[in-house]
Amino acid sequence: MAGIKDLTNVWNNVKEIDLRPLTEQAVRGVRIAIVGKPGLGRHALADNMRRDPQRPGAATSSSIRIASLEEGAEASRVDLVILMLDEATLDDAQERKLAKSWSDANLPVLVVICSPGAWDKNAVPPIGLGHWSTWGKRRVVIGAPDDGEFLLKAFVPAVIRLLPEHLLALGRFFPLFRVPLAHQLIVDTSFANATYSLSTGIAEVVPVFDIPLNIADLLVLSKAQAFLVYKLGLSLGMSTRWQDYVAEFGSVLGSGFLWRQVARQLVGLIPAWGIIPKVAVSYAGTYVVGNVVLQWYLTGRHVSAQQMRQLYVQAFARGKNLASGLVKKLPRPRLRRSKKQALPSKIEGRACPQCGKTSSADAQFCQYCGQPLA
Image (cartoon, rainbow, N blue to C red; front, side):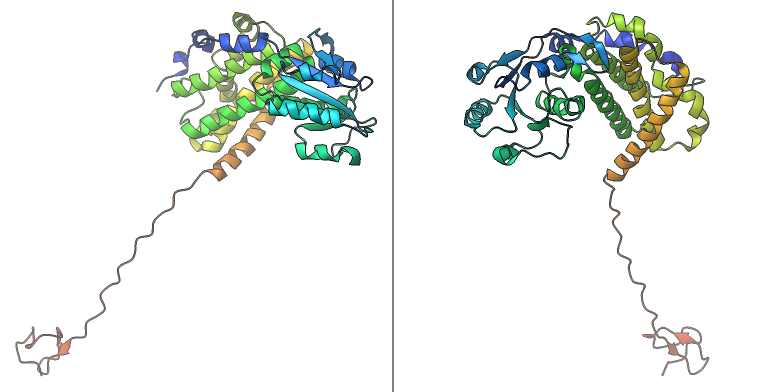
C-alpha cells in the first residue's frame, strides 16, 4: 500500500502511452453524403451539422457531399449516407432501390422523412411510406431539417449510433454533435470507472493525511480521467497536443481531482464505508473532471470551486444510485445447506429387579449390582 505522497502526476504516465491512434481517428475526418430530391432541405441540414446550437459562433466548413437521387449510386465511398424523403412522396421506388444497394454494401444509411411542423417523438411514417417502419427508429427519423429539437433528440442520436468508430471525428468536424458526444463520453467513462471500482473493491480510496491507498487502482482511474479529457478535447475541436491539456486542466486533474476533492468531505466516513460509496466516488470524480472540460468549451471559463462542489454532490448522488443497481445485479453465491444428521433415538433400558436401576437393553446382568436381569 502507498500514500498520497507516492502518487505522481497522472500526465507523466499518460505521455508514456501512444496517443496517436486517438489523434488519427479524430483528424482523419468522416465522409458524409446527403442524398435526396431538391427542395427537401439538404443544404439546410448540412449547414446545421456544421454549427453548434449552444455556440453559434462555433461553425466549420467541413465537406458534406450533396447529391441527387441520380448521383446517389456513386455515394458508396462515404462513411454514412443520409437519404432524405418528403412525407408526401407517392413514389419512392428509386429511394428504396438506392437504400437497398447501400445496405447490401454494408454502408450505414439514415433515412430522414421530412415533415414540417413541431417534432413529435411518437411520429410514424405516413401510410405511403409505411414500409420504412421495418427499418426501425434507429435508422429512420421523422422531422424537419431546420428543427433544433428534432436534430438534437432524434437526428444526432441516430447518427451517433450508426458511426461508433468515427465519434471523435464526427464531433471535431461537425459541431452539431459536440455537446451530445461530450455527454456520452463523460457518462461512459464515469460508468467504466464505477464498474472498475466495483470489480476491485478499492479497499482504501481517499488519500488524505497519508491514509493508505491502492496506488494501482488510483492510476487506472486517473488515467481514465486523463484520457477522457484528451478525447473530449479532440471531439470538441481543441488541440491535438496532450501537453496543452496539462497547462489548461492540470490543476483539475493534478494527482487526481477525485481523490483530493472528496477526501475533505468524506474522510470521517472511512470506518463505515461500504462498496456503494466507493463506487459512487469513482463515478462522481470522473463526471466532474469531464464537465470541467465541457464547461470550458461552452463558456470559455473554468468551473469555480463552488460550482465544482455542487456538481460533485449531484454526481455523487447519481453514482450511489448507479452503484446500488450494480450491486443488486451481482451474482450471489448460494450456500449449500448441510444435511443434519438425526440424533440416535433414546434406547429403552432394562430395570434391575434387585436395585431398580436401568441397564442397557441388551444387558444380561445389572451393571450396578451384578444381579441377573429378568
